[in-house]
Length: 438
Ligand SMILES: [Zn+2]
Image 1 (cartoon, rainbow, N blue to C red):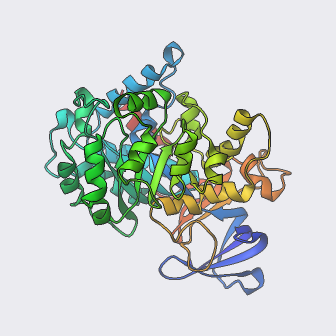
Image 2 (cartoon, rainbow, N blue to C red):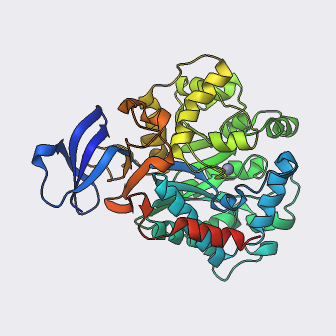
Image 3 (tube, protein in one colour):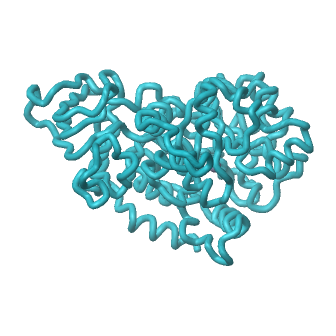
């Protein structure tokens, strides 16, 4: 495909009618022009085309839990016990198949790049696979075969509790024994045209302060040349444990050890102090609203973070729902619930969080807007469904769902057409791979 003809396109300066996006051989947008200049062979994209969404926080295997954690009213422990049980059952082959189906579901929901916060590294009991990166490489292959880009955020996970309690049971698969063990394994991972290697600190619970200090000073971050993410203050109990052991908040602990900065994303950032919000200025906060409501985490201070100079991004995390449109409007709607007033984010701010800031937080600075030189990541939304019929185009983020997405283009290649993934029968493969785990 060398050109796409959009009925409507959401360009950086607003929504325009009849727009032609020409694509160069490297998959980038080479021109944006009115329809009169359309060449032969252009693919028509009906409805409203927006930039591809970045899913900035994913644990692919959690998708297997969807619709299975409601028994006994669905406590946190109903969820956590099943999550560990599933974690114990996957191997590189089964994880590849599950992740390919999950990433295909994401593609159908308009995700063109995923940030995979990956901690299921080793075989049961912590036994190393012949290739110690077999699980991470399975995820990179799964993303390629689902047609989306991936930033593999290879996760450092060393202990079970903030007090240094050792890993046990299913958690043994997550651990590399030491920061050096983790760094040497990760250094064998290689990037690909569709894949970047980044790093994650699971949380201040799972990584002790001395490892945080070495993490930032010893240079594994520079060696990886990718972003760094960490779960931060998702639940009050995590803050209390951190305060009891270190005498400070998780954000303060990360700041003290040089982890914060422009390449850093604090995932969740739900229970923050005023000082935490100031410290995070210049970093990114990744909100995962559908997971945060599923787990009863709370509502983070999105507007205060944005006002403090923190970029906001969105992720589907546990995949209780995979719908970037739902995550995006929840940024505004959750703020309304918390503040009991309307009117916190403009539609442009919401789109920015879902697209350009999300891709940037995953190390892809050249994705997320429909402008010359950017990657050709396109998502077309039907304006003829019962959900979108009659709306103002600029209100699409408040009205559409993933079910309204008809076409998805990643790096200039059509991945979803007429609502169907071109290479993966996602629903069938999800059924097969999920049911095989139970
Ligand atoms: Zn997470």
